[in-house]
Image 1 (cartoon, rainbow, N blue to C red):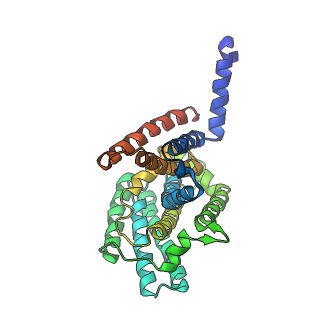
Image 2: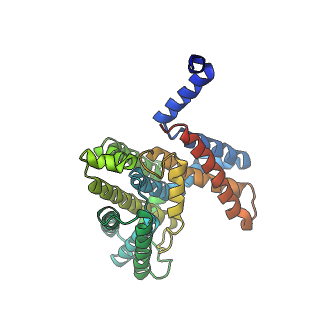
Image 3: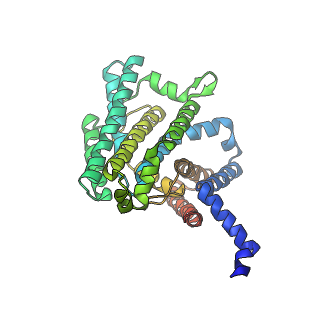
Length: 330
C-alpha cells in the first residue's frame, strides 16, 4: 500500500483530481478550446473578432438558459419548461412593444413585465414541484405545454417584428464595443453576486442530500422554489437575447432549446442528480454546442446530414465530459 501511495502516477492522479474538484469546468474549457481550433482549421475567418462576436451574440440566449437550468439542477431538480418560458416572454414583450408604439419607454416597460412574467412562471414551477411534491420532470413537462399554449394564444403565428431600437441596440455597439460584451459583463457580475449568497450553497446542499438538509434545519421547500425563481428569471433574460438576435416574436422559438440547455449543463460538469455543478461550466457547455454546430457547417457537411453529425458530435463530447467529470467528484 505504501508503494502505491507514494508512486508518481498516483500523485499525479491525485493532483488532477484536486484540480478538477476546485475547477470542475476545466474539461468543458478544454473542449471549447479544441473546438475553436477545429473551427479555425476548417475556416480561419471563424476566429476573427467579428465572427466570435457574432457567435457570442447568437448563443447568448442558450448561455442564459443553460445557467437558468443549472440553478434547479443544483438542487437535484430539472426544468423542462425553461424553453417554453423563453418563448412566452419573447412573444409577450414583442406584442407589448408593438402595441405601445415601440419607443424607448415602451421597450423598457415591456422588459420589466417580461422579467416579472419569467419570475411568475418560475414560481408556478416551484410551487408544483417543491410545495406540491410532484415529480419535477413530469410537472415541468406539463407546465411547458401550458406556457407554450399561452405563447400561442398571445401570438398564434411567428413573425411579428421587434422594434428597431431593440434589435439594433442588441446587435450594435456602445462606446466602440459590441453591446453583447456589456451583457456578458453584466452576467459575470450577476453570477459573482449570486455565487457569494447562501442560496447557491443551500441549493447544492439540498441536491447533495435532501433529507440531511431538512434535518439540519434548512427550509428545503423554500430553497427549491427560489431555485425555480432563478430559473424563470434567467429564462426571461434569455428571451430578451433571442428577441434581439432574431428581431421577431415566435411562440415556438424555445422548443429544442430546453434539451440543449440540459445538455449544456451536463457538458459543463454538473451532475443531474444534484449537489455538484458550476455555472461557468454551463456557460462553456452552451458555447460547446454552438461551436459544434459551426464545425459541422464549416466541414461542408451536406444539409441532410448536419443534424445527424451534430447530434453524434454532441454525444461524443458529452461522453468525454462526463468521464472527465467523474474524476472530480468525491
